[in-house]
Length: 215
Image (cartoon, rainbow, N blue to C red):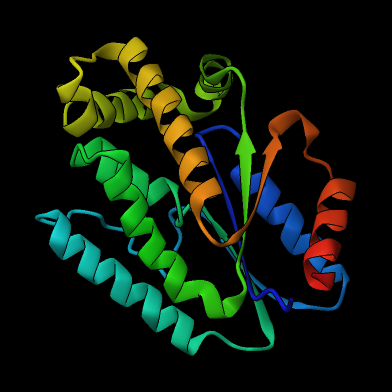
């Protein structure tokens, strides 16, 4: 399989950016041309501003963006993305709009169908203790970040439906999101690897990428 798109996924602080950068480094050393795009950067398949008025508008525009990327992707390049396949759709469908898992899965399946010609590989970095991971990144990301993500998660959609509030509510949101994301990923007809955060290593990623190429 000639993989042209690799996407790292997982909860905040799980190591998505670090893993994506490591994958890009491995591929470059193999002589491949690589475009690695991190969260928040100008993106060929995503929007920086998610202030869509409603879900149908968002769905239409995001799917169009994915189609545009898939149609124009350079056949001699491997693209490495961070969190645009699961995290962004789940934050919107589940957290913002309060949708059920089946609705989120249907939307993510549409994205999967669009990128299928690129033989994508999804790497999900799993964490056992969600609270510990978030507490571990607080010093780096700061109180402003924490206040913003708490407000996003508990003041709309899923958080309001379940009467969640504060830091405990945020953790509850993430724990449920992880359950849904891993279930959706397993249900999709797309190559994926769910890897424990503590198991991530350069050697493991090299072996995984080699197996994907030989498949």
